[in-house]
Length: 123
Image 1 (cartoon, one colour):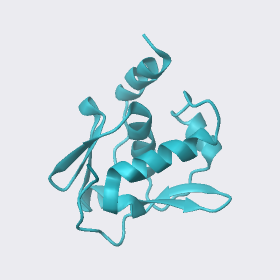
Image 2 (image 1 turned 45 degrees about the vertical axis):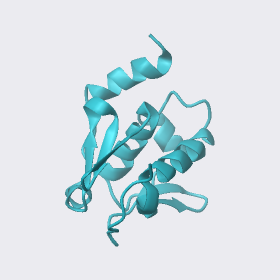
Image 3 (image 1 turned 180 degrees about the vertical axis):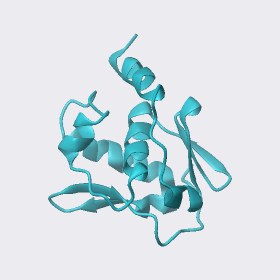
Image 4 (image 1 turned 30 degrees about the vertical axis):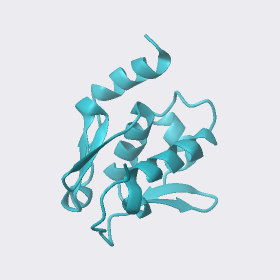
């Protein structure tokens, strides 16, 4: 079993839940598919993207540093800068709702729930 697959299995045994605010804004994590449901559309994510979104959406408004993201379940990343690549791809997959994952310059990333957007995910 590959390193990412093992981490994915470890994570699946105790996934984080999005906050009530995130859930009310239409974000539902689907751990058995490594997916997120936004409204009526399901977007399949990589295990790493799923873990990032799960962690960020569990505490909207909280800024997570890159090192914190690596240390708290995203540990299969080679370096902290790799987080940037995964966030970029996560935003692309979320489509018009990419505003939900924001960059905090020189600090890290946060998930923001306000300003709900009616657009669907990118295909």
